[in-house]
Length: 109
Image 1 (cartoon, helix red, strand yellow):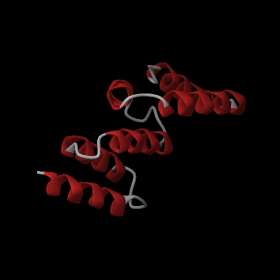
Image 2 (tube, rainbow, N blue to C red):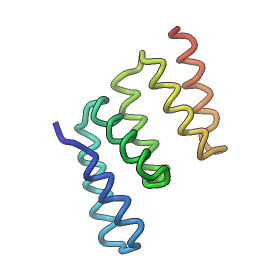
Image 3 (tube, one colour):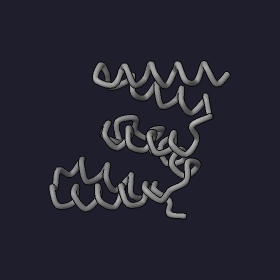
């Protein structure tokens, strides 16, 4: 399976460099790798990249990554809570979605 971590780092570097062509190419590669990654690969990427630099990925990339992981593991309350916490970090636009994830996690337990 494709490891999305290098693509996430490339996206972060492209954004830092503010080169629109590099950002576009990095975003395309990130979405492509993420699309075919497993939940484990996505979570490894998120946890690794964000541990290095919590602001490394833009909210849209984080939201997409967590969304795809949650779709693969809809019955994982720990993952649902982790995704909710990340959404709450960038609210209030996604607060309702975060509350829904937290509610689903509680129901599963």
